[in-house]
Amino acid sequence: MVGAPTSVGQCKSGVELGPNALRAAGLIKQLQHLGHNVVDFGDIPHQSINTNQNSVNNKLKNVSEVQEMCSQLYSLVEKVVLDKRIPITLGGDHSIAMASISGNAGVVPNDELCVVWVDAHADINTVATTRTGHFHGMPASFLINQIQHHFNNPNNNCIQDCETSSRVK
Image: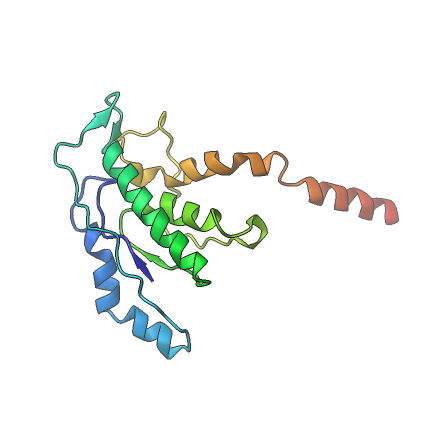
């Protein structure tokens, strides 16, 4: 378990309370009850929203704060993976996905990496499409950009398999 009590990727206070709220609701005890050996690696240092909402080019908000948070979270997630454990990152601000997924990807081989994304929307805004400038709505676009070289032809194997099977018939 890794906590990311931060709200720097968006402008609403309260999301930084997510990790402790999930712990208080008994998440760790429930996972242990299911037979899992759960270790709580704690939280990255708490970061709350910057009320000034400093921006880069009047577009992206809290860039330095998001970068600092991502650096800290990346390191903690990487530590968990190197300890041969599966990190479960708790948060509320969706920008944490950039660091939690990258922290895994930096250690786990590509063919073994699995991401479970639970959200009501895709968080795939780009710097060009964001209306708010908040990283909260952009982590998927940053991650896709980061790994796009792995997806030049994601259906290559399927195409070859389909051609082979059609010849066999």
